[in-house]
Image (cartoon, rainbow, N blue to C red; front, side, top):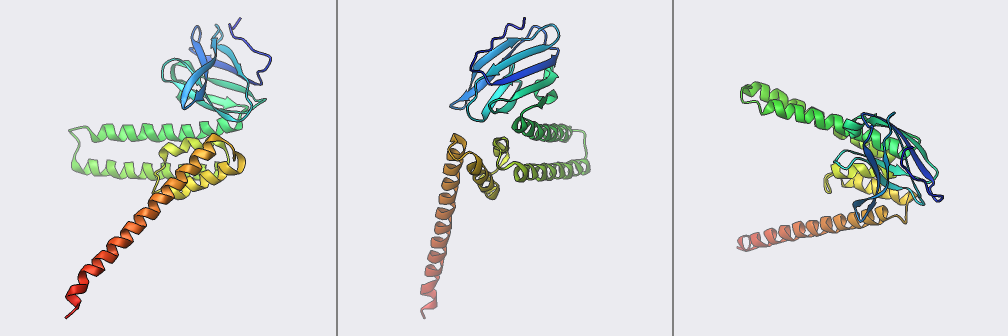
Length: 239
């Protein structure tokens, strides 16, 4: 027995197979006010298998993992039957997911981000080596800039491809409100197309409105300061 229960209302089923998982308890969590709340759990059996399930009415974010900070972010929709595999010792970096298109998209971006993050950390470790020359430091700085540019290219490509899917929301933490405002608007419009009543769209629409107001105010302040500067010059022009 897997010590896991299924209720009659459940319509999303996750079937998992994890290496190094035997005897560990895995938790399925849902986000309430941004905080993860446990909704199902399962003791992984000797073969590394587990099953968890939940009732789902609208597509939304969930996470599955262990009590420590190693988890998989999922976007689940009703009637999905999902297969998960991975290594329980390094779940976020090893997992594969099938049967949930939006969760597969999340995985795609997480892989890109993890690879970027690991490469940047490796470069910074080298940069912090007190024995390296200034020339080597400059080479590493150039490498870091290239890696960042490559990541930004992959991120933007992902956004253009998935801007109408909830999965695109995982990119928001990598976007700057001002520099990437056009991308934030694209995401907002895309989510608005498919999920016009969702909390995510409503929050994004509010965010866009706030940024637009700030931009407008900044532009007005700049315009006023220009007017003041011109005005200050005026007495010198009145001979």
